[in-house]
Structures are given as structure tokens and as C-alpha cells.
Image (cartoon, rainbow, N blue to C red; front, side, top):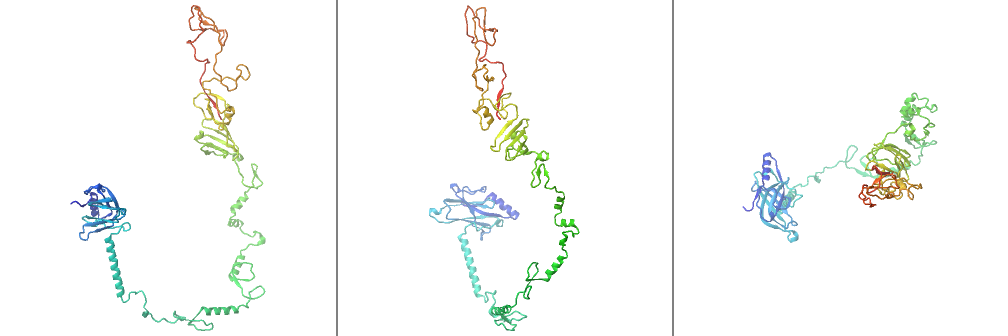
Length: 538
């Protein structure tokens, strides 16, 4: 056959398992495709269509009434979907597994915008061994109804309505829920002993016990009674009359006390304390205070200190704030990630940012604070924290003033110092260093010797403190040499009286004033050890 439908291996396995276990599989969706441009041949190993174009819920799923081993699945493709060829069909269960696959005669499904408003009905007939293993259920809220389904249900509804209306017209009593007039029995007259029909009356002087008064009769009786009471006065301390009862105590002279109120007052009076005793007639005063909830208050009052007393000079007239100095105690350390500012007063310890510093802030919150702390290396620091500018003045406690060059035996620079390499610095960050170097630049002492400032002594005149000076050699006077004497004479100089070998033979009475290519270096220097010059910055 050219066109046929088969169960996939997965579908056959699921149906066999459902039949064996007595369960069911739910076939819920149908997919169509174009086969990749050519008519495909269904393969039992397929798990998907060759080129799926559309998948949607099945419109109808039923057992063929002629052949009960055949399941018929239908799907309607609406007019607004299409633009592709139909060559392959697949049925999927609720677990998205391909249960059956089929090919079909090639047909083109146009779209509405192509000029065709045709809907397409796709039907697959599947032969199975046991249709009881397939759930024949469709969700009507997500599918389109087929014309056959609509026509069938319309006919069924019309037939039902016709039959129901015909039976209604033919029935002798189509409304048994209603009481017929002929079935009504006579109602009895109303009396003092039974309910029934009563006649209304507006008379105000009748003695009948079978008539009912109208509102008109009631109003006439009320008006008559009200007019009769106009001459009765209210009761007072000086005349008889109508009065109102009350069961509440008060100071009214027009209300009358009920018997209950009088009894309550008498019973209450028997337990009253004598006013002129001022509590002296209370038999158990301690229990009385306890019942009032004042036992703790009285106990505290017995142990209270008069507010005229003071603690460390502070009067006990309000809240008293005490610190470690007031009571001679050392408060516990407060942990910070970094050094606290002037918002904190007291002892503290800080974390890695400050090398595990431990110290104290001295002063008043929101004011100027003095800060002293020691880091893990034993370095002592002191700062003055100004509240007005948030400035931190101070640094490592040592004998070197800020700005002093210090020979340091390591190539790195310790915290609080700068390397003397001619670098510039932020004068706002290092205000004390800026006083030593107003131009914001530290001296470059790399490879340099430090010489004491002349300060008008005359040994090194014309120098300014901190100025640089190039190298120089003191003037040397040389004498002639000859073939027998290879020495020069130092008539004056720093090593006066010593002889220095010239390093070259002098023959034939010749003279040589050049000492190039002889022993010596490219500069004049004393013996030395190299240190890294640093300057204290804070």
C-alpha cells in the first residue's frame, strides 16, 4: 500500500503494557507535517515526524462503530493556519510520545490571506488489538468542533426538545408542583384558639374577639390614651407624679432607685472602710498592698536612695549616664571592621584593615576625639580626630618628626612613610608632610649622600636647605716625572704629603699630564652602605 498508518515501536510497547496491567494510555494530540518536501514512508522506529508543521489537541477520538478494533482520530486545521503541504500524520500521547505515524495523499493547506477560507479535517484510522487500553477523551475547551459533531448534537438536542414539549402538552397535569383551585379546602375563621381568616375592624369601642383592629383603630386608641395623661405631673421632691426607675447610682432628684440598687448599696456599704481611719482599720496591710499590685513598688521605696544623693557628682534627679571612669571599671572591647571615627567613645578592636588594632577613643561623641591604638606588630599610633573636618591628625608614635628622611634597611616602604624618590603627594592627605615640603614633592635621595646644611658657617656657602649639589673633585697640582721617578707630587689637597703612583713610565724627560686609563672610578666617593631613604608622612 502507498498510504498506511502503523504503530511505532514505542506506541506498541505502551499499548501492550497498558493491556497487561489493565491501565490506559491517553492519546491527546495530532501532528501534521510536509515530510521534508516528499512523501515519507511510515517507520516503526520513528519518535517524531520528518518535518512537523503543526501540532494541536485532537478534536474527536472514537471507536469505529463498524470495526471495534479501529480507533478514529480527527483534527480540524482552522482557516487561519496553513501555507504548507500535508504528507505525514502522527498521534502523540499525554507524555509527548509518538504512538502512531501515517502518510497521506499530498494536499496543500492554504492560509486565509491566500484567498481560501477552507478548514481542513485530518483523520487517522488506527487498528489496535484492544481499544479498551486507549482513553477516548477529548478536552472540548481547546479544540474546534467538527461539522459532523455539531450536526449530530444539534439533531439530538432538537429531538429531545420536541419530545419533551410533546409530552408536556399531552400531560393532564404538566405542573404538579402547583396546587389546583379545585383542591383548595375552605379556610376556618380565626379565633382565640386557632389560626384562620379574620375580618378587620376600625372600631375603638368593640368587645369582639373575632375581629382584628386596623392601624386606624390603634391610632385612635393611642391618641385617646395620650390625651388622658396630660394632667399627670412628673414626680419631684415636693410633689407626687410619674417617675422613672434606675438601677444606677447618681445625683438625680427625679429618678427612683430600684430594690436591686438599694440592696447593692447596702451590701457594698458593709465592706467600706471608715474614712476617718485613713486606712488604719485595714486588718492586713501587707496583703492590702499586695492586692493593689504595689508590693514591688513599696519594697523598692523602702530601699530607695534619696534623690538628694549623688553618684560621682551626678544628682539622682533624672537619667544618670555613667561610664567606666564613673565606676572605676574597664568596659569591654567593641569590634569594628576598621578604625572607628569620632562617633564612638570607648575601647575598641579593629580587623584586618588596621592589622588587628586595639585601642581607645577618648572624648565626647560628635566632638573632637583622641585616639590611641596598638597594632599586631606592637606599633603605637596616636590620632586627633576633628569633628568639624573629619580630619585625622597624627600617626605612628616615634621620635622622627614628619618629613625626616630615614635610612631604612628594606626595599619596601612601611605604612605611614613614603619613599624618597622624588614622588609627589596629596597635601590634603598628608598636611603635616606638606609643611616640610610645601611643593608637594619629596626629595629624590636614590644614590645620593646627605650633607649637613652650612647655615652660614662658610664651609659650604651659598646653599639652601634641601638643595641638590653635583659631584666635584678638589683641585690637584701635578709635578713632572722622569724615567727614574714615576710619581706625582700632591702639593696641596686632602691627602697632602702622600705619594700616588702615576701608573705610567716616563722616559726621555717627557711629561704626561693625563691619568686616563689608570686606576680609579667614575666618581669620587667615600666607603658606604646602601640604604633605602624613606620619609615619615604622618
